[in-house]
Amino acid sequence: MTARSDLSEALTPEERARLLKLARQALEEGVRNLPPSPLDLRELSPRLREDGAAFVTLTIGGELRGCIGALEAYQPLAEDVREHAVAAALQDWRFPPVQAEELPKIEIEISRLTSPQPLHYDHPEDLLTLLRPGVDGIVLRDGMRRATFLPQVWEKIPDPRLFLSQLCLKMGASPDLWRRKKLEVFTYQVEEFHE
Image 1 (cartoon, rainbow, N blue to C red):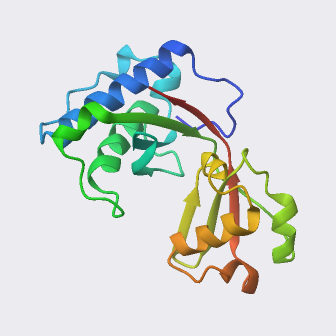
Image 2: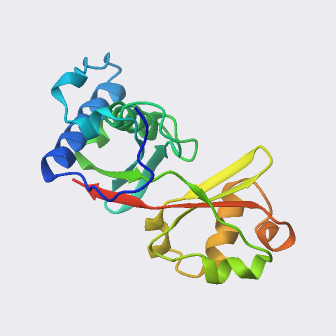
């Protein structure tokens, strides 16, 4: 199955609830070092079975505790959410692995992504008018290095210049790289929901 390039069909409240439940179950099993529960895709709606890309963000008291996801769809959305719920807890290099005693405090947010589209620009300053704060997730790529911020990050970093500088830092580059070199830039949108 192919992934959707847009989010014209939002998930139903039931589909969102199912994904959050699957993420919670995978998170609990992963942190407790239990084998993942089997998932029968035939029991899921077509949208949860079709290939989809998602990021799973974990927070405690509003503070980030882990966030990992996929930019490109390569597996059923339900599986993608399960995989990234565990990865956000155990493999986000910015944080120590989530411990079992933290589980009751963790809140889960899921962001279902559209396919990233290239953003064409001529000069670095063009980016400041082309980016849509609060709407677009941004991917910067420089050779093998790449980093992304979900659209929700605009809430914490509303200034486009600072947003791009922080994204360069996340990529492991100098914060002014976006001003000095023409980078590959991609944008995407998300359907976000949380517990």
